[in-house]
Amino acid sequence: MIIDVIIALGKIAVVLLVGLGLGAYLTWVERKVAGHIQARMGPSVVGPFGLFQPIADGVKLLTKESIIPRGADVPVYYLALILALVPSLLIFSVIPFGPSFTIFGKEIKPIISDVNIGLLIVFAMGSIAVYGTIFAGWASNSKYAFIGSLRKAAVIVSYEVVLGFAVLGVILIAGSLSTVEIVNSQIEKGIWYIVYQPVAFILYLFCMLAESGRVPFDIQEAEAELVTGYNVEYGGMRFGLFPLAEWYLNVVGLSAIAVVLFFGGWSGPNIFGPLSPYIWFLVKTFALVFFTLWLHWTLPRFQAKDITDIAWKILLPIALLNVVVTAFVVYLFS
Amino acid sequence: MGIKKINRKAYLNLVETVLFLDFIKGLSVTIRNMIKKPITTQYPKEKLTPPKRFRGAHGHFVWDGTEPDSLKAIEKFMSYEKGKSRCVACYMCQTACPMPSLFRIEAVQLPDGRKKVVRFDMNLLNCLFCGLCVDACPVGCLTMTDIFELANYSRRDEVLNMERLEIHGKDFTARRGEEPDRIWPDDKERERLWGKIEWS
Image 1 (cartoon, rainbow over the protein chains, first blue to last red):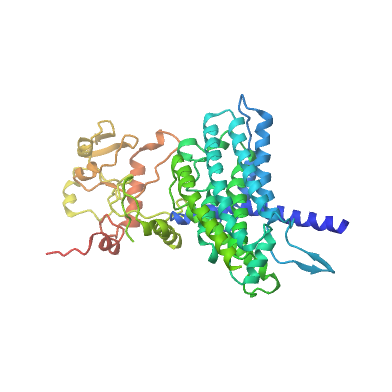
Image 2: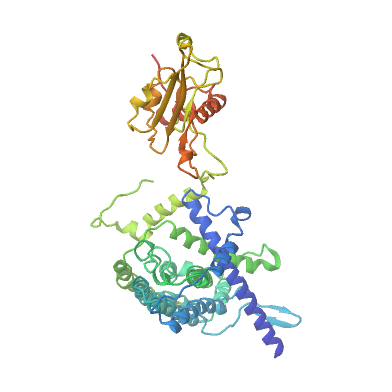
């Protein structure tokens, strides 16, 4: 019993440290990618290839004075921070990083909690994360922040629906909501579900961009109109927390879920020895993360009305059609 | 892969919509940019060499034996020294200058009847670097160098006096004197930009 607790705590510690470290270092990756896409260098001064830039940024953010604006709703102002960060981290609790293995006669699953409603938790956390944004905008008593948070709310309300229906096809084929089961069923069938569900994958990509506030759906940031939107009244590390949670942790988490759903999780040829599944999982995840960054620095931003327009009028019918067709096919052929 | 221009009324056709062809075009542009070497010059660490005809800070060419023979004619009227400015205080530069208060030039007559330039100040805060003064100079003295880092801590330092002009001129001759006079960095670059010139 004690051992179980220790193992669980160990897994949580590993995921938390790796997740937050990755989140910090993705800022460096993003700035490098953005720089090279624009024929610039990106950070290159602090350390070799600018590798210590995230540390320098962290020190800067931590030592900065952070001001609470006059008229702010202080408890909600702080609650927004928690509600932004915690759901992004909780997504990682249902991500399976590899197959279960046995050590000292004890079976260990490289997943924090293998619950049978894993995907439901992901969507629930995605929905809760929007409260962080809305509270941040509301509590900071600034109209720019509030407009940003309202826009984000509109986007999330539209795209949560599409996301649910897009993933439903995969769930129908796999016959399970558990992330581990979905990966196992892909390995058993020997095929990635992107082959069966290409439309669902594209819908998922759209929703992933919308959920994580990436271009072309970043109207809640909209630097040109809203400064940076909902987090404009935050300072210091509190300011750094929102992009960390939304732009980096959310993107990594949702990319990992996409890999689980559509790219066979940790499956792949065994060419790296015993660590092969983990390496495959990370490679696939970061390929998707890179694709997200690549899209971010390529596309312009949609207008707010266009975004909800696309979600309700185009993506939702396609998603529904996809679900119906998949259901028929699954019913007839299995 | 050309970029298709559309207005808000012209929509993409069905194939382009379904296969995200416009997305793919945009993504291919950015990935090609990403593979390409950055065009950044890390400025304080590495500096581009401007072309020789660059219009930077001014300088005075000095009497160093390279002056044309025609200048020998004025030797008996001017008090000159080797290594000092060729200026004859003719005020041509001040006349050509669009800015009335930029130059302050003074000359005196020595007891032996020769002319000596005692002051040649240029207030670069007023200068627009048009180069008209350089064109006006009848003795090939005033020039413009490739020095472009002209920031200083006080306004007083922005005024070039004779010593600094001479230093600039000597420095410019030493570094770039041998180069052909041109506005492009090198001939290869010029051919790339404007093609080969066919002289008659």
